[in-house]
Image 1 (cartoon, rainbow, N blue to C red):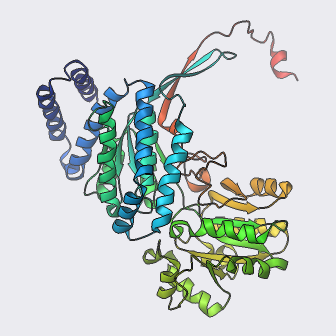
Image 2: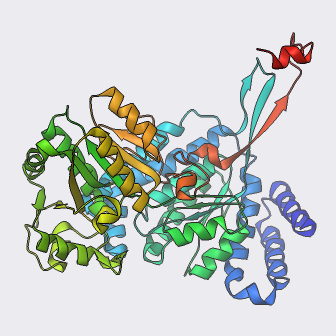
Length: 501
């Protein structure tokens, strides 16, 4: 490790002192890479060759980038977000072509809204050097980079997740390596090239943003073991692998968002919000609404409110519901063939014809939690619905769903009763309770709430995650504390002063 650290410092010195002599730099850099690959263990070479080179290049770039001033870093981060905003149509079309899932117009909206809200949250925030002081405690806070961030991105979000990861990483002076799902490879490479054009336009170093090519499970695992920090957004197995890599990691858990409709709300307004959230991008967002719980005395009225949106197809016929149950789930697991499909295509797979204008399929379930598999996460426009009696029963049903899947993620309540809102917040094992908003477009942060804008939603210990809040740029910086003696502060004069009330 000492040899590697010295080599990094050596390369950093070359970059700073003789940057204008490109041919000399390339010679030394090439020699450094070849040497490191040669000394790698034989059994790790197959999958380590690419990741070793990526990480070494990123480390050299990062050590240069960490010397950049706050304003230049912010200009780069802003321009990355603005690029996605300005090219939303192109990038969304590319995502649809490559993955075959999702809704084009929603992806365009997602590119624009996420890039805007993330930058709006980042701008003006200090992330380099001295970032704050607590004069009462005699502390000064100094932000320092973490190094090379490995960003594992899912097929469900091949544009906005790499953008978010890159913006957070670079905001704190880090380098980032994006490891995309194979179906998101073209999107990731296109974005990586565009982001590097922006970096270099502002005088930044080569290889600050890189993309794994022709990735595999083994390559991703090798990358996770080589970077300094991992941000893992995707399936449970991959997130578990990230936490087992031996490196600091931020991961997510599965969603399975229960929605409680309280008795004091406008059902038409609530139905419209739930449809907006649950159908967004063909229900690919992990925070989208999964099961609606409505008061038993107004259950039929709530169903009518959904149907009156003109976007919902409903059935309580057990034979029909069973057909969807067997289509959406195979052997107790979500059927990957229906993920991100339009509602009418999911229905067609179940042998049922519905209007192609339908955005959401609403089905009456047999019961909450383990009583019906339809109360688990469904990454397609199918939502279950159940009546409840008392509000306490609604909370118990919501928790039963979370116990089946999605514990630690999110829940929603539509209510004007502050006592009920607080009761839900206290009772449910979720990291965020979304109140009177569409969940999929709000849980990850919006202009109208205080959740940190992100694409990585922590699920706490309930979901096997290291954080319970939304991932933010602050998670990707080290903070050194400078501690001074507090003026006019005295220590307790006796044990009694400490222990006696």
